[in-house]
Image (spheres, rainbow, N blue to C red):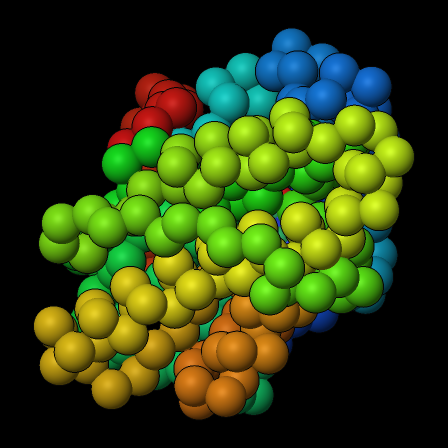
Length: 325
Ligand SMILES: Nc1ncnc2c1ncn2[C@@H]1O[C@H](COP(=O)(O)OP(=O)(O)OP(=O)(O)O)[C@@H](O)[C@H]1O
Ligand SMILES: [Mg+2]
């Protein structure tokens, strides 16, 4: 009975594999994060990431199969991230998937990573049906998308500079919170008062974002403080900075809903894991990706693969990774 979909993700610093059923039930979702490996460098080192993916890809896929109580003979399709991401890292997953596909005679579907983030909403009992308006806020992207069908999306807004996740990471670094910054800033902000500092929300034309100003404002605020004062105010600064980013995202998504006349709002990507953001989105009645599916994972890639065409057998050997869209 070969009807499962294997999803493989290696675009950045997570080696991830998952098995889902044809109707979107997640049977396993194994994620091996390299965060600890990159922490001492303060960010992802591409060559280090590629080498680690090479070590982890086989055990992670094996574990996903074991957890799903499946073997390769149960797999009807392999979905693999083709891009955007770090090309060296992507090539490890892509080459592995091609080899597996060739050896086990399983059709291969290259998947766009951003389509994967959107497809995190198409899993489980409570899957969201298009059309909807989607904010994708991650480490590398902040996009407003109109999703009219399962197979793709139209981009109606984006960031002029930093991505929202990048703004969280850079803010965390300025506050001395280390790497990965977003989750650490989230935790600290819960203990702070968001009304103590006012950080700016950029006014940008159309449905676009800009996060460079808020980051610079935090830099100036931190520079004015000596170490003792920074220690006292760190949590308040984190909470105020977080509020500015969350407000910017919410303002835009509400404007986008008005502009596009779309009733259903959904949010995906790593920043959708932020607790303050999730709480505000809940009061807005927005759909948010399930917590384990916000940051990179294989289940979202398997989900997107359901709607991505297979590449013919000889043809897929020529499929190449891409770093940006
Ligand atoms: N709780 C949180 N609060 C704020 N930001 C968070 C939280 N959890 C994760 N993030 C941020 O989400 C980002 C990671 O998300 P994701 O894995 O979707 O991004 P990516 O894959 O690196 O980028 P892209 O998907 O654009 O290629 C990081 O910038 C991280 O700081
Ligand atoms: Mg991602």
